[in-house]
Image (cartoon, rainbow, N blue to C red):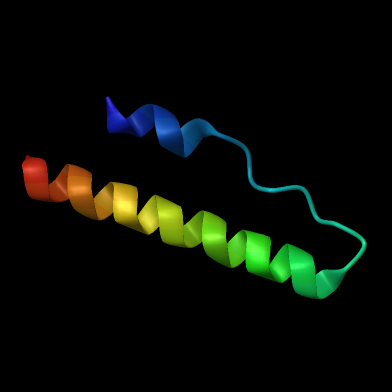
Length: 42
């Protein structure tokens, strides 16, 4: 089930706001791709 991937925690914020911003963006991007592929297969 692709849904399990959504349960993984958000990236922890780091001391560098720029780095944590990139982490968060990457997290949402990967979630979006998982959602798109799961939706396309259904």
